Length: 354
Image (tube, rainbow, N blue to C red; front, side, top):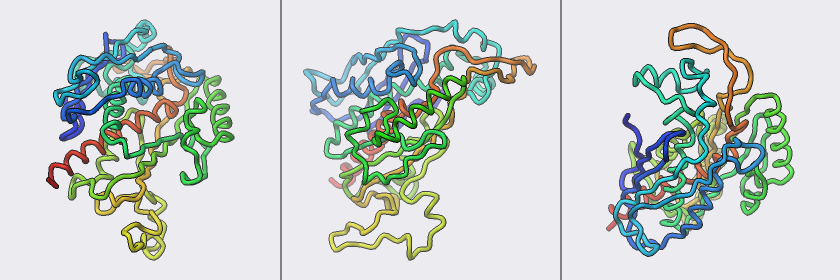
């Protein structure tokens, strides 16, 4: 299986399955001498871990990170950083009913056809649990670039949208509620809706908005390695992501050039920022902002038609512990992937400008 690594100079390779002994990764290219705050890394893991509230999967995993290499006396050494995250709360019997069946909208069928074998326990490698390793790498990337501020938050759940622009929000309130919406009133509405969906045995999707501030001018490489293209690839690699738009996004397609152009100030900043902080694939110093769309979790606790490995249409009902809405736990994953992209481009830019 290829495709387990991301990045050029700052590179993360992940391994492990949802119900295996452990997840883990190797981070290559991290510069030496960075004083790491291990508690901050663990905090990011706690934001992603299952069982953190009543509106997410009730699988109980501490997601404690064990570093194996690349760190000495709290500082990075410049050598590969190896780590593992033990799995401690697997209930593989919850998945025995899908041993010979393909769940609708899951990776079961394509994995089986491509590789001739699949780990049906929790989806194996296709499980969103793989993203725990990305959060470790993202937490280290954030500490590489402490001046850059990355804040993601839930901006919609199903039909419920937070209409306020990000400039009117207080990012310090993101962690004040289980939905991770910085608007307190909207957070309550979203949480109630997720609870209703869960009672129905159903699931719902949503969107996450991410804002990156204090980005220097010059990150990103034309022609095929544009900053926004890499951010899009990084976000679309996250489980359940169905869409990515930055800046004016699809709304910009409705506008005239006279409305959409960001006019300059004398210091190189722009009066508006419909470009979303990126021009020509290169950061321009303005805020980078984008939105990521997540589909409803595919496993629902309702009867559905399915397909078995002999080609028969069957009937099945989801079992096990699953998120009714994945977006609250995906917030730190979006931030982590954004940080990895920026760390990689920071090192590339540093190499080219020496």
